[in-house]
Image 1 (cartoon, rainbow, N blue to C red):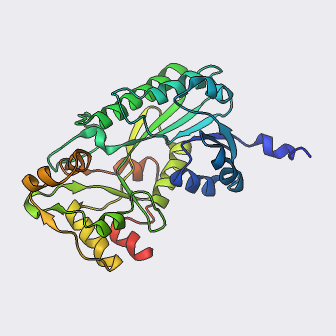
Image 2: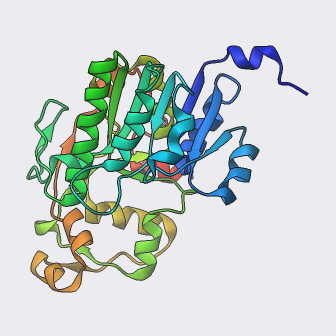
Image 3: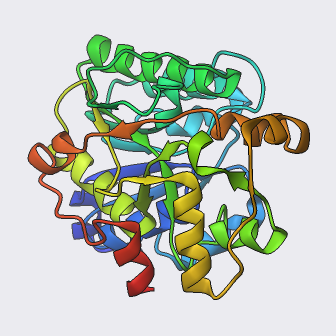
Length: 298
């Protein structure tokens, strides 16, 4: 039996990287969009179908598998991370090359990271600050941002780059701070500690939806809440709410000896981000303005 004709009059949205945040977006948009999701895993297709999404098998590392994406959707939500090595995001390059073939994309939202700024010494700033990536991981994100913004300029689509900080939620398994607390991973002593930024997963999904509808052309937006906390204080707060011991505190010199490079890189960058554009341009009213309110709610 064919689908009702009204289904095909809905705008089409392609989600690239439909994990936890992608599925939260699906929950918000189901019934309003015809939803597609790129996945490289055949086993994940059933999960996507159950959520009301049409799965499209393809691998961002293999351009030949992406041909079905050409002309598929008017809007694209790009949530997929770059490959784990290199300074260029070839996955985004492969995706954009396919999307450009029929020129149908009118809205593209890309989820980047606040890590593109590198260390700001605890300064408070908005999206006009120049990027200064301090790691290869962050340089890949800068490369991806430049590619999607070029795509918008050349093909006339509206592109929004969301710079996303640490994501948390009680029902989010990936990267949950409780895992670090259970492992007893240390944090820095107060005098060496750094400011970190946060967003609740549900609020981030709402940001993605609003960016699709209200994002200005080739615009960068900080997708962060109002929290002003140093990293150690954040983990102390989570520990108290989870009923777990607070993490041990170590000096930066001790961290250099005890912790792996990736973890040290997060502990060496300090910044406080303005979310004025988020509130004024996307007109988001945060459901969880601070980490404390997010923890209380969960």
